[in-house]
Image (cartoon, rainbow, N blue to C red; front, side, top):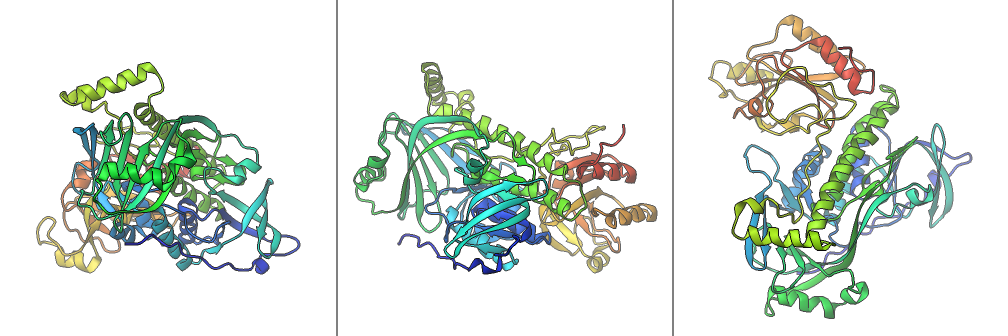
Length: 572
């Protein structure tokens, strides 16, 4: 066993970027952390040139963001690294909460089958960053290490940057600037932009411990354990025999003293047993806060991730919500840069993700108040809930040891077309799409499979979300081949200024030359989307539903598309 060694990325002279007057780039991203890299990868996938500036020359130190939720994995699938991350990471769905030594509550993040990805994987942030860097470079992103942005000056049509490097300082301009420079965000501070919320008066010790242990791949959380009385402890398994352990210390703890090995090791020995060998990889003390910027968009400057909002680590909402920020922003920014949408579309990025940030802050604050009560009333409530939970199932649902990250349902988004018909299930306008097992029927396989019985034709097995996310898409549930007139309408939508690609969904093999057909092999699409013959969904490039109807109607779909790219709402 050995500690992780950070890679050093090569510095490149900025001579090619230096000019008078300053060069103008279409898109610059500040920050090569997970969220900035995700934005850069997405930009390249959509054909945009992107320059990434970072003041460091390596990946993050310590595990930092550890838990990557199912929705993040689905985003990373589209970006091209999810399989690698899942292979290296530790997959889990079960979390357990203990009072002293007794289990009082457990949850399952994915209680029903039929999803490609698990509820969570645990993987140290530095591994994820390495994967993202390699992917971004393979796609042609221009990443410049040791390029520190020291000033940003917004203008009506661009933003001007002052950049400091080992070879000197230079100016450069960006038509659009994505700021992903972390919770302390030098750019946000330089611009004097506000960030408001709560800072919680408590301190926690993070210890990344290298050891061999046969504990299951689950999230374990203790209130008042005998090895750390009157406080809480969290245990997570990571890759390469690294275990993440968080100890609540209290506000009065001295951060510098508590980080010393002579203080950390006895705590770990009390928890793990004196005879278990282990090695410390990383130790840190943190406090946490729940706050956000008032507005994530300031003209040509757009804030994402921790630069825009921060939450406590309980619930794994930091990196996960940051990935969703980039996922929401980049398709909109691409349409604007390509001249296919008005820049007012970017206002919806700010509105949607500010809504999501408020939701995350609310849930994170509730978790933090339960874990670290700061009033007599809240502490009494917490202790009574825990006492009841040992014996009464109803109280276990009130135990909040960190309600875990789930994607926001953007039901209030101005891009949605509201339902006018009755549907069952959760796939409302604004919902992130549910996955489902499917079989893609290619044209020659459709012919072979025709007549072999429902769901028995040949084809490529897979997952619904693997076929979504490349621009706007329509899902059309059918029980027979669409009419020639309908196919002509679908063809026209596919050839429009903002194309809508249609995928047909059937319970059995169909021959529809020139059109992809997904066979709903287990009936889960019909169940989760309340799909019947004629049911039509319009889906955003970030896999959020924007509209649905009980029958296909070309003009309604076109009107919903115009609304979804920032146009006027359709007439009712």
